[in-house]
Image (cartoon, rainbow over all chains, first blue to last red; front, side):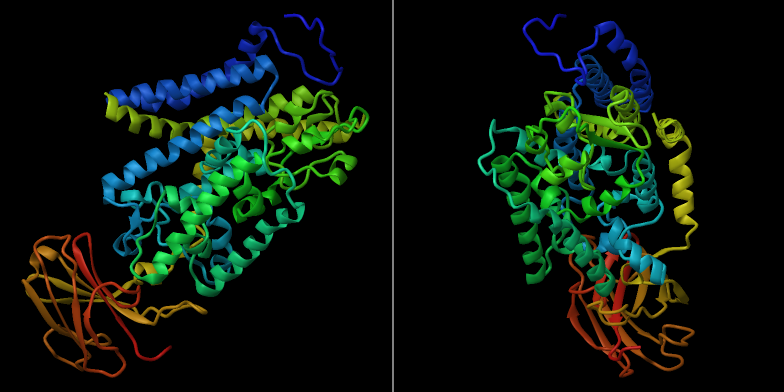
Length: 390
Length: 171
C-alpha cells in the first residue's frame, strides 16, 4: 500500500494493513456474533439467515472503517439499511397483526400502540406534573404491537444516549436512514444556499410540541407533525381531522425526507424539523466524545461545512475549532477534511493528540450499540424479506 | 499536555465503552426497572381508568370504571367506562340499566342512571353501535354511536365490549 503521488498530511489517518484492521475488528466481530446468537438459534431458517447476514454486515462494515480509516462512508451503509429495513419489518408486522397501518381506537385503548423514541421529550412535562404518560401504549410488554413496552424503549434510549449522546441520530435512529439514503443519491446538491437560521426551527418545534403536549394532554408531534407516520403507522382516520393529520404526514414525508434531501444532499428533516433531534442535542454536552477542528492545520477550505448533513458547522464554529450542539458524530466532516484538521476528540484531551484513539473508542461504543439495536431491526426487516423468498 | 483533564477524559471514555458493553446485560434492565418504579401510569383517557365496581349479571359481568376527567385543555369530555364481558356470555341484544355510582346490580335496584343497549354481532369485525338513555341528567344520552371520540364510544377490546358514556358537566 503506497502513497506515491499523493500529498500526505500529518494529521490525516492513513489506511491500515488488513491484519491490523482485522485485529481491531475482532471485539466487534465477537459482539456482533453474540448479538446474532439468539436469532441464529431460532428454528426458522429465515431468521437464522437474517441474523447471520446482519452480523456479517456489521462486522464487514466495521472492518472497512478500520481498514480505510473512513467512518461516514461505511456507517452510511448501515444507516441506510436500517432506514430501509425498519419500515419493511414494521409494516409487515402491523399488517399481519392488525391488517392496516392505521391504529384503530381499540388498539389504543388496549395500550397496544407501539412506542418509538420520538415522543420521549413530549412525555416529560405531563409525567412530571401529573405522573401520567400521554401515550396510548403500555409501560410493560403489552402484547400485539406494544412490543417491549414504553419502559424498554426508554431504557434503550437512555443506555444508547449515555454512550453516544447525540450520536443516537447517526447510529440508532431508525428513521434517519431514509433521508440519508435519499441525500446520497445525487452527485451534487441542486440547492446549495440554505439559510442557516432554519437550523433553529427544530428547537421551536420542540418547545411548541412540549407545551402543546402538556396543554392538550396528547403526544402532539405524533398526532400532527411526524413525517414517519407515512412509513410506520398513523391514527386511523375517523373524521376530517384525521384525514388532515394523515395528509400532513404524507406531505412532510415527501418534502423533508424524499425531495429536499435529494435537492440539498442534507438530512433536511433532521436539520429543519425533528424536535427529538433538538432534544438529543442537549446530550452532546454530557457525551465525552465530540468532533473538533484543529485550527493549526485548518486552511479553512470549508469542505467540512459542505459535507455536514445537518449544517452543524458554520464559519464561526470552524473559527472556534468546534462543531455546533446539533453535531451527530456521523464523521462526514472528518472524512471530508483533506488535511486531517477535523478530528475525533475526547473532552479534556488536547485536540489532535491521538485523534485515532478517540475515534476508535467512540466507534467501539457506538458500533456496539448499533449492532445491538440497529442490528436487531435490520434482522427483522431481512427476515420479513426472506419470508417471501424461502 | 493537560494531564489531569486528559486522564479524566480518557477515564470517562473508557467508562463509556464499558457502559456500551454492559448495556444489554445490566444497564437496560436497570433503566427499565427504574422507569417502572417511577409510579407513572398511562393517561386514563386511553386506558379508561381503574375498575371500581363489578356488577354480576346473568352469564356476564359489567365492570364500572372510575370517572375519567380530562386534563388541562384535553379535547374530550369526562366519561365513565363500562365493560361487558365475556363477549361469549352476552345475549344477541344487550339492554341493561346501570347505576354507575352506587348500584349493586344491573337490574334497576338503587338509583337508575343509564339504560345501555347494543347488539352483539357474532362477527367480531362488525362495527358496534350503542344507544344510551340517560336516566340521570349527569350523563349524556347517546344515539346509535360508534367510536367517534375517546369519551364517547363502543368498541370491542379482546374479550370485552367497552362503552364510554360522557358526562354532561365538567368536574
